[in-house]
Image (spheres, rainbow, N blue to C red):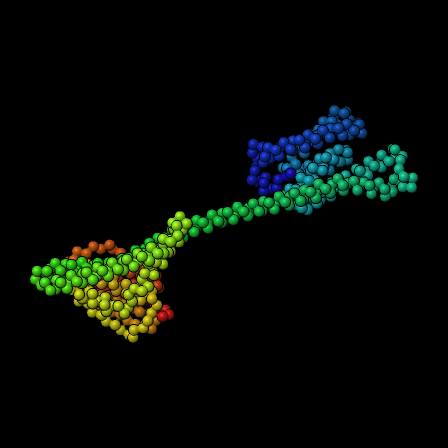
Length: 437
């Protein structure tokens, strides 16, 4: 069986030249040996007819028959040689194998058809001449049939097609089958590469999703716990300062610290409970990490769905007032319901801004502004300079408060601005598109 051009290009000239496998080389050597032996035997008769020495005819036949060795590399050469030696009545086996090799190769079909036609014509002419000579010499045949008429050409045509048509048709079938298999193999390789790329992209997306969900969960935990714990620290400092001077105020501060601690623990327990319910039911080995991340994010969102909204801003400001801060709440426009994520984000921005005031500007006056507009809701928390007479509560700062606020606002398509004011204070502003309620 011959190889296609793609196979030859891929294999190139290696340790087995143009053969890709050892058995292919052994097969071609065997066919070439058979062809050389046939041509050598036929070379004896050619030498007698051409008045040449017999060794010359035998040597010529061996060389001609050995051409079949290159049938995989140059099938056109094999067919042309078989056509050239056809008048010498040799190389019929080489012609049959050469036609098969040519039809099964990647040679253009018009060239294959032309060479097959030339080979058929050459064999037909040689067969007609040989049969007429044999009939004339033997002087046999049906008495009512003239050998010089249609009988000899018809038999010669039948014999010629019987010799040349089967190898050509079989070669075309093998070549088409091989090209189909190569196409299927290339398609399978392409699909495998695409699947590998999709798997890599899926892993990248899963890694990105895990990182995103970690950030979101950390943001929710920070918003739930940091504000109340900060107020607890402020009240604890105030409790320490007035414990001996004003026992009644100390008792009130202690009660506030206890209430805030219980609220923080309740919110934390609810969030962890939802996380546990969403992420634990399936076996860890059976759940992809990306699915766990999405479940955790959904849990964090679910834990905050029933959380505070814009209606709770007054209570939020009151907690800061009880901690000793002078907080003023200004509302502009008619209040109306918004999407839950809009209300939660607005509340968290104000909450985190008030927490930063307790951390970095203890005793400063704070103005919280909330504006209800046609297609958006705006909030601003502005504080003046810190009161030097008020002791610093010593609250730690992780440096993620402003980053978390900006991420929340940008995630909803809003605008977030923060920075120092000319009066020496700090201002946080955010605008959120309201969307549909």
